[in-house]
Amino acid sequence: MIQLSYLDYLAVEGKSFLHRLSAGWKIVGMLVVLSGIVILRNLFGLSLLYGILLGLFFACRLPLRIFSLTLYPLVFAILFIFISGFQIHFILLVFLKVLSGSTGVVLLLGTTPYPSIFVALDKLLPSIFVTALFLTYRSIFILLKVLEETQHALYLRGGLQWNHPWRSLNNISNAFGHLIIRGIDASEKMYESMMLRGFKNKIHYKGE
Amino acid sequence: MSHIHLPDGVLPVWLWASGFIIAILIGFILFRFAKKEVLAKKLPLLGMMAAVMVLGASVEIVPIAYHVNLMVISGILLGPSLIFLATFVVNVILALFGHGGITVIGLNTLTLSIEGILGYLFFRLFWKISKRLTPAAFAATFLALCLSTFSMIGVVGLGVSHYEELIHKDGGHGIFEFKLLKEESDPHEEGKERGEANFRRFIAIVLPLGFLGWILEGIITTLILRYIHRLRPDLLRREIKAS
Image: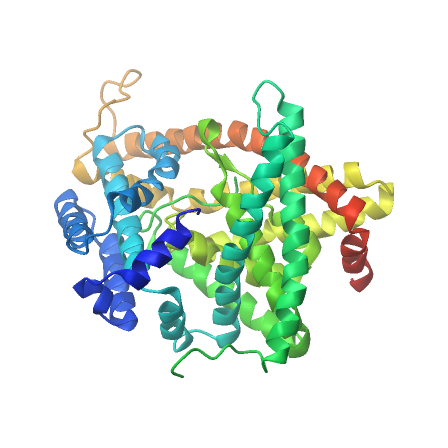
């Protein structure tokens, strides 16, 4: 999640052909990838899909640091393979589906600034939902900053130590409690400033 | 633990499509009866709590693949109708980071909302009865997580025949073949037994891990609520009064 701001930076600063493509087309592309993931049930088809996505990833010159994000969902897929009785075909199938999905999503976020994604979504989804999505996305950045400050305070109070689990749990909980209170305060201020700027249940994006 | 960490394409289409339809229907009904001004006023808070949940979900305890959801605490602070929208938003953002597939957003919203709504109701009830925050918060979180994990297992269980289809797509040749007990048997029956055993194995792995998670999240939620109660007691009382 910490890499979110870096992803955003890459999306804005990138100059590749995928960066220049409109957000709407990229969302359509993502839907095609998703359909492929849902429909394809053979290793060849999924390998091909993943290969294409990998090709696009490197063609867009996204840094390798971001590539690690595409591998993260494998942590959760491991739990699910127990259901298969360790069938290698099933494991590969699940892993390829996971990797194709996550690579597609990272490609979308790494090449499209988030306001452009929200503008495109605003045409398809209820505006209240897109506004909530936008505010959440913005709040993540606000809270990340608070979290950064809190981490220093946490470190000074002993931080997380496996040999002191109770103290660690207390520290984590206090950090989250602090994050929630600061978040609520920030949300109240955000609402007031939004009202001052004429907010009426909908956020209008640049160019609308 | 109740979050379905399934990739796209593993669950049968009818299952995830039903999840989407039911989630959209519930969302539609909630918006229909919600006061627009109240909803607009609470949107920044909703966004902030959703962001807290997203950040909570990104802190992974690697050995048991567990992360805190903070769903119960958000349910307590937002109330039952707003937590549904917050859950939907959280699931969309988490799916955009590969944390559960995009197609399972509807199902994840339903199971996680159960956690938030039940947490809110249990907390109110237990706090009213016991008058003590600590036991009320822990019991509410533990029970809410327990019930939502069972609902998640139920959802995964609905797709067993579909997983078998995917598993046996290559003719059933796996790394390990479990043919110790029967030398020759009806392939249909064998597949059925294997499928049942595998789902039991899934439950056998999920439940003990889940149990650890329920206790861990119960403790963390309780400590957070105690912290909030110490610094901003109005936040907890406001919801109780509003209900």
